[in-house]
Length: 303
Image (cartoon, rainbow, N blue to C red; front, side, top):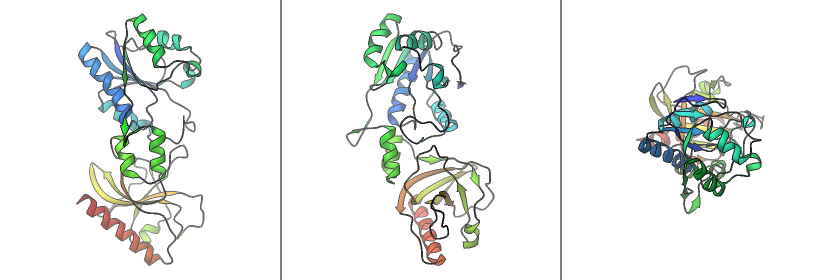
């Protein structure tokens, strides 16, 4: 997959089927939009493409981010996309809807088909919508494919709904709407070393401020190291038993059966079930028993 970070002509002269959206989280609704572009391109001899955009690191659309850029690229490529265009939002935000279609989608991306969701908006002040696309596309001989809104438990799937479920610790609902397990891949940092002292060495990952935090507590997870998956238990929170700073949030994962240094690496930690809220234990022995029990539950979950 070729990635373009600025508005520039795509190299495919045969034309493209272009999936459009911000695609935060790449949930099942987003996958349907991208899938329609890939399928149309295969039938009509075009190249499947994605048009999205980038925002400043601390800037999000409606809430904390769900997926880092590198993982978004990997996932989109696995879906079969050939071209991924993600200019800065500032490069095209002032274009009228008509100019966005003619200058960007037709002029730069050589669109032969446009694919979007039912609530897609575009152009300056989001003045363009699906109804406008239905009028503009025939003028350019461009096909329009509008993916129906994805539903889960009789309600629309959305990134906002996924954030709410994540904040509530409802991991099965999050994973169902994402279409894959929720995961973090942040670099492993040096912690206080308490895990080694307790006999349960952990990897310490820190959520960047712009990301949505899951509910504080203990989770059944599994961790990929060197292509091998290990059952694991993850504690997310402020570690109230050993830490008095309520602003310091850590994501610590105990991986039974693994030993070795992962500092600076980005192991993938997938979340599967919420076990219990964070709480302050009276003794370190109680904390150790909690970690031991969580690890046992993780092993049983994946047995």
